[in-house]
Length: 348
Image 1 (tube, rainbow, N blue to C red):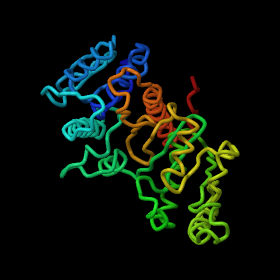
Image 2 (image 1 turned 120 degrees about the horizontal axis):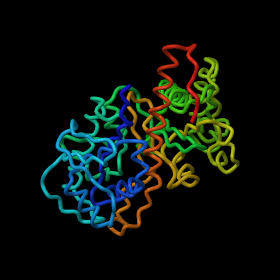
Image 3 (image 1 turned 135 degrees about the horizontal axis):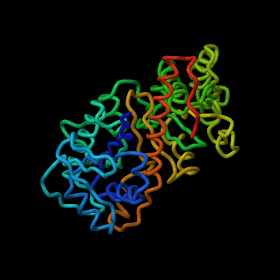
Image 4 (image 1 turned 135 degrees about the vertical axis):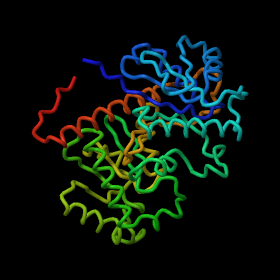
């Protein structure tokens, strides 16, 4: 019987002046990683060899010119470009931004075609990627356009999962963005992801209020009483275990989050400040709701330490493992959904 190939992990290289290539190389310093997956880095063998020399990495890189040359048991580097690239550590550079986009676009196309099974993205600079042909505030919005489904930023660890009703939206625009339709869409995405991607049968979801003290009965804003609360009540009536709105200021400090499988925050900083305070360096940014799987580390380009060989690869490594586990969970879910009476495989 022919052995199936290990899960192929497509990796976009991110901002070359940041820590992306460094944390990629450090992740695969451990040869055991190749027992779990086959990495395919979308960059160039020249630039990755430069980083290998600069960091003193001992990894063996396998340069390829097309995706038909992927070899299992090796760290494959697809030559998305051939020219030399001048790396200036810690510098925001529009030219470098174009290489980050080329890497991302090539990796995404491979993901869409099924040549790679999952995508893990190294950090980009949201400013220097902008151009006439690429006008997205970040990975999530680009992937929502390219891949099927409804995207949602889902920050995850084993013990804490935080989804967002709105992500890269100015705070002043948040209340008008949060409509009953959006609330239902995002919570349905979180619920479905918990079931399919994280193997949680009856997930319990907490939702944080829009205003301080969840509006304090209308004293500090009416959105929680008039929009969020009634919509959550309607969702509960459909059978989902969704609770709130909770006052955000005390929710995490009181450890109330431990009573739920996921927390849905109304806006970016309301959810990500506590998440990164509790889990920084171990968290993973997962784009839930898409037909394909994409994860990334919970940090940015870290220009301030770029080139100093000080970057911690823990979050990127977690992003790889999370992508692998979600891929396996989805595959298992699809098998069980096609045959509900089939016995679930034993956990290893």
